[in-house]
Image (cartoon, rainbow, N blue to C red; front, side):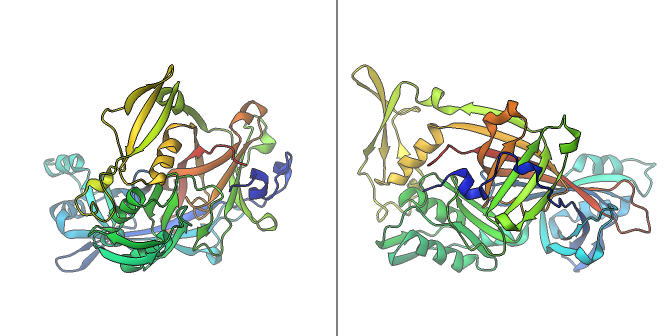
Amino acid sequence: MAGSNNDLIGSPQSNDNTINFDLNQYKYEISFGCIFNSDNSYLELKDAIVRLTIHSLYEEYVYPVIQAELIMNRPDMLNIQRNFEEIKFKINIKRCKATEEDKPSVSMSERFVNNKILLPIDMDMNVVDQVRNKETAVDNDYKITLDMMPQELLEVNKSLIGAILNNVTMEDVIYYCYGRVASSKKLLFNKPDNVKVYKQVILPSLNLTNTIEYLQKVYGIYSSGIRIYFDFNKYYLLSKDVYNKEVVGVSGEHRNVYVYLNDKRDKSMNKNGSANDKPNNRYVIELPTVGNNEVKDVSSREIKGESIKFLSNNCGTPENRSGDGSWKAGLTSESKGGINSNVGNKKQRLYYNNYSNPYNEEEFITDTARNIHELVLPVSGLDLDVITPNKNYYIEYTNKDYKLFTGSYHLTNIIYSYSLESNTNNNEVKLFNMNGMCAFSKLPVTS
C-alpha cells in the first residue's frame, strides 16, 4: 500500500523550499564517429556534431531513439550516404560538473555513455541530394540529420525465449527471461502484484518484450499495466502505477525526487539545478514555474453513468492458447465500447476476460476510470541520472495559484538535446549544454 506523500519524500514542510541546497549544473563532452563495415575504418566526426537529441518515451517505445545533427564537408557526407546500409556509429558522452565560474571541473568528469554502437535507421536525404547535384558545391557547411538506435539493445530483443517452467511465480519468470537474453545490464523492476505460485507456466517462442506482454495478458504481472524499457545502462520493467512500489535492483541512488516549481515572478527564487539531499534520502530539483499543464478527464467520456462488468469467456487458458498470437486480446467485447446491457435504469458495459485474469480487469479500470493530469517541464543542465522512470516524484508549486497541481507523479518520457556551446573556441574542449522536456503524469491520492 502506498503511504502518504510526506512519508515518501522525507516529510517536506511548506517552507522546505527555503533550504539552501547546493544546486549543481552539468555540461557534457561528446565524441562521435562513423565505422565503415567494409574495411572497419573509422571516420572521426567529433568536430562535426552540433546537436544530439535523445528520445526516451517510456510508455511508447522500448528503446531510446537518437538523432544527430552534423555540419560536415561534402566528401565525408557523400561517403556516408553511399555506404548508409553498411555503416554504424560510435558515441561517447562525458559528464562534467560545472564550477562557479561556469567552467567544467576536469576532475569531476565521468563517462555517462561509454562506447555505444548506434545503427542508422534514417537520414535526412534532401539536403544530401541537393548538395550532390550542385555544381558549385564547396567542401564544408552541409547539414545532415541521422536517426539511430543502439545496436546492443536491438540485439537483445531479437533472441527468442520459449520454455516450460514449473512451480514458479511471476518474479521467478521475470528473472528467468532476463537472465536468458538480457543479463549484460542491471535490471530494475517492481515486485509483481501477482504473487501466485503456478504449477506450470508456458512461454511461447517470442522475443523478450512480447514475452513480458504475454505474461501480463495471460497470467498478470501488475494491476495497472507494464512499462518495458531498455536504456543505455539499465533495463526497466515497471508498473504504470510505479509510485511507492518496491524497485528491485536499485543501489547507490535515492528513490525519491522532490521538484520545486518556484514562482518565476520572484527573482530570489528563480533557481535552476539539482542537488543530492542526503539527510532526507532524496534528490531535489528546483525550476522556475514554466511548465505546461493538461488535465484529461477520461472517466467522463468513457464510463459516465455506466457500470462495468467482466465475464469469464472460458474460451482459452494459458496452456492451450499461448502459441497462436491470440493471447494479445486479454479483454474482448462484441462492440467497440463494450457490450451494452441495462441494469435497472443504468447502462452496463460487459467485457469478456479471456483468461480469467483479474489483472487485465484492474489495468482496464486504471486506464479508463481515473482523471489524468499531465505536466510537461523544461529542464536544463541537470544530472540525468536523477531523472529516471523508476523514481517517485513529488512536484510542488510555490505559487499558490497552482497548488491544485501539487502532488505525486511518475515520469512518462524525457526528450533532451545536447547543444554545442556558442562561445567555444577552437583550442578548447567542445562542451555541450543539456536542454530538454520531461513529461509527468499525476497519480491519484492513496492512503
